[in-house]
Image (cartoon, rainbow, N blue to C red; front, side, top):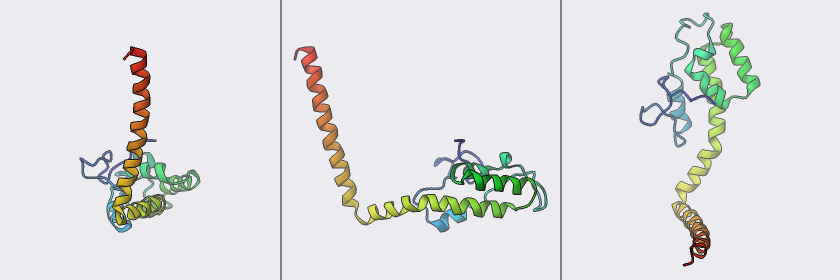
Length: 143
């Protein structure tokens, strides 16, 4: 998987302020994706493009199925589709991929105590495993 391009074309990074967050609403994600720069050599809708030179295409590689991605590549290289069309496709698949994560997150936001319960349960299991390991270590060292 290539590095995902951020909304400014550099690698996606929280410190660059160009990231798409799991907590972002679909509308926030649209507002971030639609103004993204694309292939800089493609000046007009009728100019052919090169997906390898387009930061948006890294998102296609991560979220769009191969068959649809092949259509996008062909459409871009022949100027059969425009950059807005390309972004609309990636938005469709990105939002579809993020929907279950966002739903689950919303459930946790409604019940923050559940997160603490999950953490405590995991903490208890980790302590039990650590105790067992330390018992083996102490026995091996003769303590």
